[in-house]
Amino acid sequence: MQVSTIIKHIAAATVLFSSAAAFAADIDSNADANDLAIQGYDTVAYFTMGKPVLGSNEFTSNYKNATFHFVSEQNRNLFNKDKVKYAPQFGNFCAMGTAMGLKFDVDPTAWKIVEGKLYLNLNKDVQKAWLRDVPGNIQTAEQNWPELKGLTVAEARALNG
Image (cartoon, rainbow, N blue to C red; front, side, top):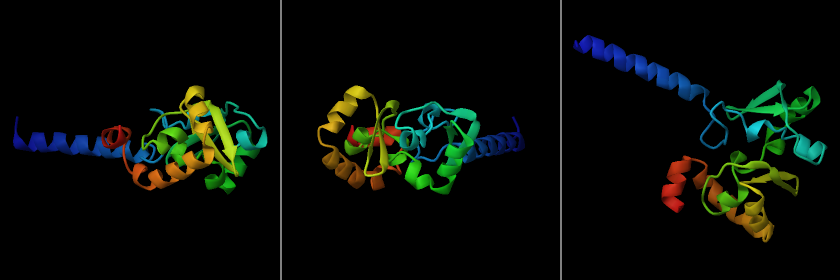
């Protein structure tokens, strides 16, 4: 293979990788392979309806390159007016995991609003442990988050796991 062909292949691969990375959710935002945040649940519904509700792909918004679904245009508009208020804490990662210095996925049905902020947990068993000391776990997670948010899941596990 000629050097020019190799360079073209490398350039093409670089462009493809860069394009894919440009659309991927930010490292400090938990989303699935399709960049869908919190498994498609409406983050505003926790506040307005007091429960987890699956959103619709008819009403979407992006935050930190993750896509959020909403049950209505009204909920999407509320989110767009104040994304920081409605987005789950710790970049949609598990609050207890963050307190442990790790990045875990979440179960959208394991949730709690504390002082106007939404916290999600890996599952309901982990949430039970988190609920034993909510103020302490939030404080520890807030201390861990500045460093943790810049790490991949694997890097966090290697450092703190």
